[in-house]
Length: 168
Image (cartoon, rainbow, N blue to C red):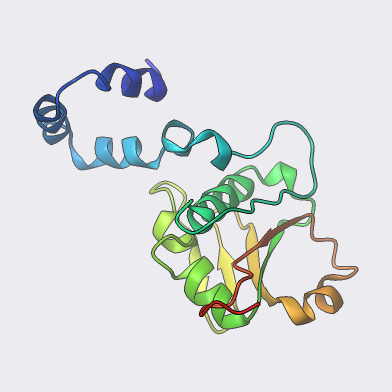
């Protein structure tokens, strides 16, 4: 039975029954259950179907933009065949925004990594490297156009663009 089918069967159960069921699972089973992004994501948080080069996910506070971006980045990295160069650009307003929000934050790449596909983080190089050798590099948006031009990166993730304290 697929995980979405299992989740659908859990929905009518009372909280107490769900708690008993979950407490009967071992750590690995819980990790698998929680790491299935397709099962838990909302429809607007999933990648659009078909072939596309850009996806703009523009939404308000609390809609899961960072979490969605991190989980989508993991999926893009996992399916290396979709990346010609094997490198993903993580673009944010500043290097610090990318590092502390997109990579190290509570909804970032490191926190949301599936247990079977955990990347390593090289903060000195601004590099995230997954087990299949796909790499993601941080770029501040002001220099991204110059730096990325001609590099052949086929997948880019644009991070937070608004200023922390309500700027323009």
